[in-house]
Amino acid sequence: MKNLSTVLSVVLLAAVAVLFYLVLSNKSASSEPEVASLDSSIDRISGDLSIAYVNSDTLLSKYEYFKDISSDLEKKRAKLESEYRNRAEGLQREIQNFQNTAQNMTMNQARAKEEELTVKQQNLYQYQQTLGQQLVEEETKLNEQLYNAVSGYLSEFSGSNKYHLVLTYTKGSGVLYADKRLDITDEVIKGLNKSYLQSKGVIPTDKTDSTGVTK
Image (cartoon, rainbow, N blue to C red; front, side):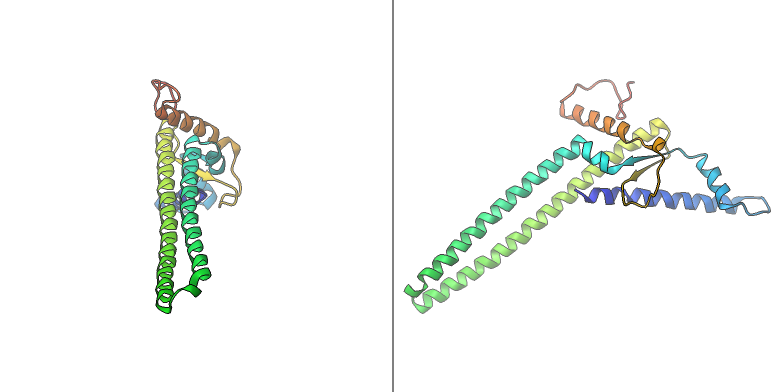
């Protein structure tokens, strides 16, 4: 599930592109004879924007939905690995048994058994590849569901709180500094968890919107 931070970080790149476009558009549309400085253009634009950010590492560590789907994925991975291990150990026993009894077989019997074991080895390899692909597809699907859950919530949350941009921030991302006053992580986690637990029936549903604001 670590891929989620990378997926969410695409929003940051898009936001930077939007700001860059707005700066250039503002600059070219100006009727002033003097070219405005980049800093003053950014100041004018940022004055009209309300920006916040969410720490994706913190969100993933505290979001109950992410914990649940991570646990489910890990259980499925363990189950598939156990199934593969049982098949591999069974084949290994067959190979060992053949090695121990080959001297009692005719040449044709031994050759037929070797061919049979070769086919089983190939099938086991294909089975391993299939299991790996299943896990990749399952993780991709869960990442998409998680992304949609977070982005869908933030869409309504941002509308209610008048945010134009909500960025993701994590250590190692392209953001070198972020003012803590713009950090809405705790508030977003609280709302996400409330919405998720209500959907599971863990806590009663009240007359609230998806942002947790009582109507």
